[in-house]
Length: 362
Image (cartoon, rainbow, N blue to C red):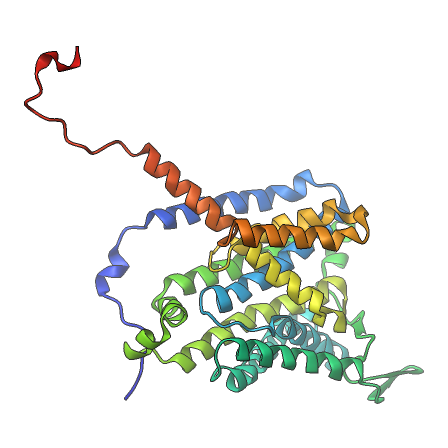
């Protein structure tokens, strides 16, 4: 018996845009306008560099949100996939002489292949077992890299490990903006990363609103019913794993090219927890949650930069308060407030009695 992802009526494609769709379009236009205007109003290279880093975080968080928030797959291998994309890009440039632009897509495809291997191993499990196995795979990858001490090739008088070992790779190439834009190269890199983030969000929105996205949400909300309706659970979850991995791996390659370095630090537990915290604070399963969560946590982290050891404590308190007071995150709470405002603004539909005496209102 063959299975399909989901079936929808043909009339669904002819329905007018929903109110939520119009809201998403309005928010997207505002975000694009702010992104275009930002380089003209921000002179600080440090601030612009932090914005670029925030865009990387938001891109990875949006893909983890696609996995967990929309599809219900609690994977903890997101930063491992990100690292594979970055390492594959760096190694293609370092060992085979690829340009960075030529290595980005192969690096992303390497991340997809890695994610499919993880998916084949994990996706027949459910719940916490998926989280534990993906975390073990990510930590195993970290250990394999940092304990790589075998000499693979000689670069001058320096012995290089195949994975770069604990040092990683550096100065293997860049995006070409330094030569083309000179002192304004950071603005060029910002534009490239912003385009990646925009493309990621656009593609994610198309997936979420498509019949395939409906299948992903059905498997999250009621797996037994979705399978009974003909949704192939394993095939659908493997597909969303691959989709998420492509953009995550592409972000990893651009990250390596932007910083001209990649090392095992990207696999640290703190990086993974920060990505999860971004999604939780912004709103798990909400489209704009990763972006809002990134803005809030990056701003809070920057504000507490001088707090020393209390910096991590402050971020922890923000995350805990968000979980307790806003279980659906900031975007979920804003959606609730918007719905409440619309209900209050809606005119009363109670009928006026027709036989009321004229003197009743005097």
